[in-house]
Amino acid sequence: CKVHAGVARSYEAVRLSMLSAITNLSCQVVNFAGHSLGGAVVALASLEVRAGLGLRVENVYTFGMLRTGNQRFVDTYLNASTSQGVWPPMWRIVHYRDPVPRVPFVGMGYVHIPTEVYYLDKLSTRWKTCTNFSREHPEDESCSWATGITQCIPPFADPTFNHNMYMNRSTRS
Image (cartoon, rainbow, N blue to C red; front, side, top):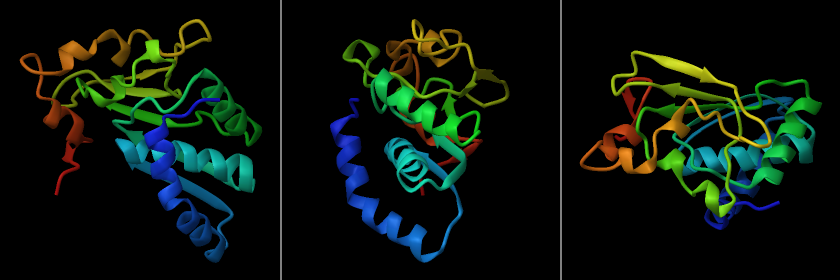
């Protein structure tokens, strides 16, 4: 399967420390959360913990995560989750016109892991759980997919605000 090289390098930078902490804490169940590149790193980490360590991963939350891998990666991720009886495998939250979840492009072979929760407006007053996906349409076309990247950058949107505002809280310090 194919995973974005920058994401793989970032995961490798934290992998041994994370695995050591999980072992030292005698974890039996692990939950993950991450924003942006951290969300993509969480995708790799939660897959390794599920499939490699065999520990139960119950909850994975990502916010503004970029597309991390290809369809084969997504299939592997879904199989690891399903084998643990965990569904959805991930809650992938996308704020309105955040440009980051729209890259890398599907035309480059990248797709998202389901399930998406899409906030439909700038102030996060309305949201939709997006579960309509298939092999032919790996992302729900009625959610963030419906708004192209050109609608997520100036002059149509404020990408800094949209990428850093999740759950009505800023991810910036």
